[in-house]
Image (cartoon, rainbow, N blue to C red; front, side):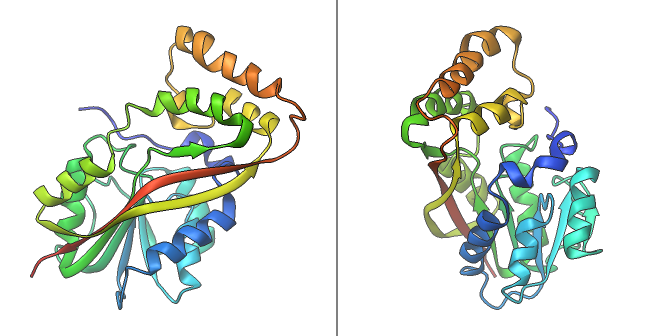
Length: 249
């Protein structure tokens, strides 16, 4: 079995390279729509706590788990002691004890995503809901699009497509409530994007072999930096699947 991915190595710059507070608030508002009267809410892969904190603005209290100690140290600053270091495959939560759970761009990072969904279903009370945001984006990025598409191609190994998540959830005894597209956007210049790629900020770049870097990634970096007016921010739009499931009685 492969290992789940920890974000210890980029905890200090995770938020600023993933859209920051603005995107977290947008995502939290979208998740909140499906939580109903849920009081005990679990975020699996809480990271820096940025989404959990934003849900607090909607009157929600979120408990969070993550495998990264560095990310959790930042979550503690946002949501206090309502966090635990734990593996998503073995949640330190009693069976049928939470009203709702959610996972934001997490399932492509875990070793066995089907098992994680089943574990989330275990801790969910009857009629409770799980909200999942998948990790593979469909991206528009103005004139950066050509190079973004090349880099997005390296994400093709991500297994958490909408269809796959539905299959895992159904196997875990969950019913599909909603499946729709979620659009998020931010602004980034070609130079800024080239810099974060060169620094291997994104997890899909961490373990690339040298040949792929030289033949695929470096030409994309060079192409971004050669675009006209490379310091001017461009609008970057990511579209991903948002899925909501409910546990039966």
